Length: 404
Image (tube, rainbow, N blue to C red; front, side, top):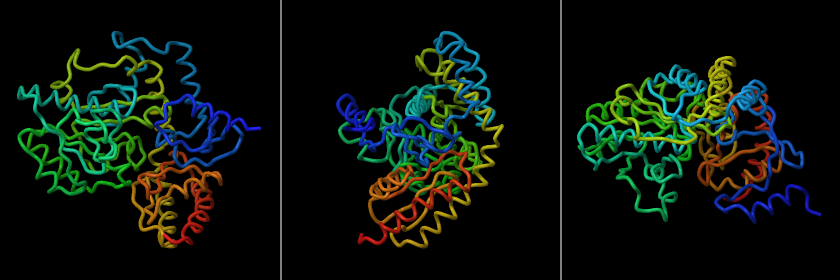
């Protein structure tokens, strides 16, 4: 007789649109940095819902805050103000050092709003509608059509052309490549301060500062996608803050709600006053009381737990342990990343490593076919890192013994 997990997977395959090649696990609940499937098997989680669950699972203060909001009101509409959204916007402004906030439902939606704001800013300035955007090769900004337009990976765009925006792609960390694409039609440059799907690759200070200067010289806007690398993951609340290179528009999501679907794009006062006005952009659910109550509690707990400081304490230990794997196993060529956003580069596909690690109780994902990605909850400890290594290393040792 099939177990509960097998039965549920069979039902899902019969009912859901097959847009994911899912691992054969039905997750049921979580606690701390551990997840449990419907059969009760325990997994150490180094994915955090793809950089979402910064606080870990089953945080009582977070849960209680959401339960209290459920008992008050879940949704109104943006025809009215609501108190959680007002407090969340103010708190997010404080930690981001930006000036205006628009709440969305996801990272892709945040990117869409950021692109619309940049286009409208340029159109309001010169009255034209033929502007171009510069994005980066190997970038990933989301699956919606606008976000796909600026995603620098042909695979994601196959079958969806033509794209709705005129985009030019520059090489990441190559300032001359960006400069060569700048012209009088350029309205914005969009990039991730640390590329996620593109290989866990951090930008250099020289590159970010150079792009900022180019944007200022050409009177166009700089957009930072902090959907994955933001919210403390790289050792500052937002990755750009470590460099001191401020964007005109910033998109965030993922850990902003720690499980509740919520995102935001933020602008400077200059962009806020001269881009999107009443009627130019909207959303039914964005900024509703439930989602923004989550944002309020997340930002409160970040401060209470000194979570960014904690990342800076444990991240060097993770880097050290991953570097030891690089030096020990020839099948690994290098480590890249920043903070608790790390990747190991292999000379072969990592799917077999991921599958066997899951069999042994460790959840990991890839970032490209040959890159193992580590984006754990930000509350992990050195002991959790040791446990992860103790599970992963035998799998890598076994794989290293095979011919590539």
